[in-house]
Image 1 (cartoon, rainbow, N blue to C red):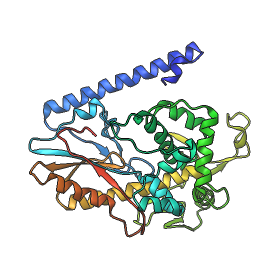
Image 2: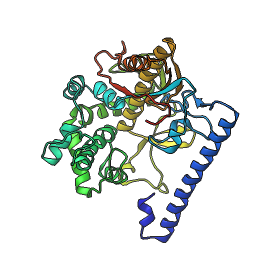
Image 3: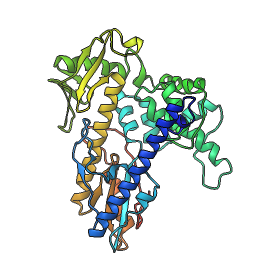
Image 4: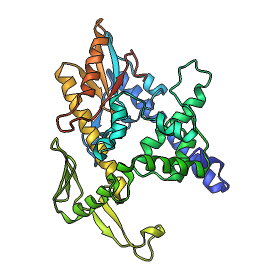
Length: 366
């Protein structure tokens, strides 16, 4: 939207301004909702269990506790009860780790098991120099954060099939680090680099995306197929822990002459019906569904173990849990206990390298 505010067309500029204004109004409404809650007592966290098709929770009311931007004033306004601390614990790069595991990209898995930064090798190869995670007082901090951020973006976006145009726009916004203005050629080079160095994910014949294309056909047919630890049967994907992803509306669609589709889609494409209408599906998109669902189950099982230890979980924003800990002198020890539960290898994913990080504070500041 920020980019469109400078568009050549005055109509596009006006629409972008209207959308940004609407978002601003949304923030005001959310703040008012939280303020009204606080006037009655402790804040209420309302989530819809398995509200998304990939089994993730979704926001349950206008406050939407899943969508408080990290470091925002809205998040910092959340205060722990007296005598307690808030402990946000986050599963580090969990979808990336799940994808590497399911695809069998062993060289990357070995880096993760050794505790190495998975974003450094790609950045070093792309820029032809030593890239590192900088300290706060490093004079090259911004430069290193930008270059490492581009590799982070490549790893987290390209596992799901992102192309150069999307990569370029996301870099300009700065979702994975400081904003970077890439040329289209540079964006394409990042995408090509990832696909070349991660063949177990991207190879068109044998990679995980290719396996997912086969899986789409099996899902549509209702036939049975084993895909690593996942079982495909009766238009469903069964996760090893027993959860199910449902694809009973999946179909191959041949577009009519009046449909606005891209040239390569003229011969047909996969689609499935959702609450919001028809949604296109393809191999790397199915990989995203699977990785989100598996990651969600890993975090939910960690949550069950954490609550069994007597700790209270307040919020569940996707790959993070907000945990309430007593400020009793043992809070750092208890925080580490919670982090260990995040890092515990599930029996149904033997050998997957998991990691997590957390912090303590009176406010929800992370």
